Length: 86
Image (tube, rainbow, N blue to C red):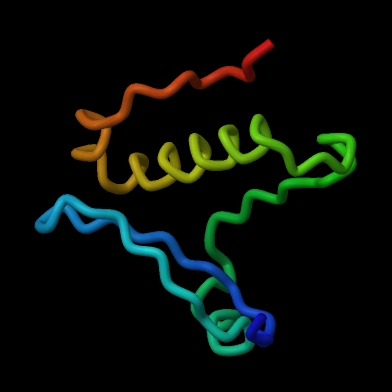
């Protein structure tokens, strides 16, 4: 398996192309760009240190909701459960 250096992940929505794009970025190069921006910490202990299917689902919903704050056009494509599944 190839060894990768640590990186941050950036998720973007293009209204023109109606697509999501995921990119990897060097954390040191990204840091000045995100300084002072909205930050949403996700603490592992609040999820019993389980990065399972439900955690991934909730993370994905949170990402889509954040994108929709600035680009509400994406809402027309969203049909996700907002609250945690029991």
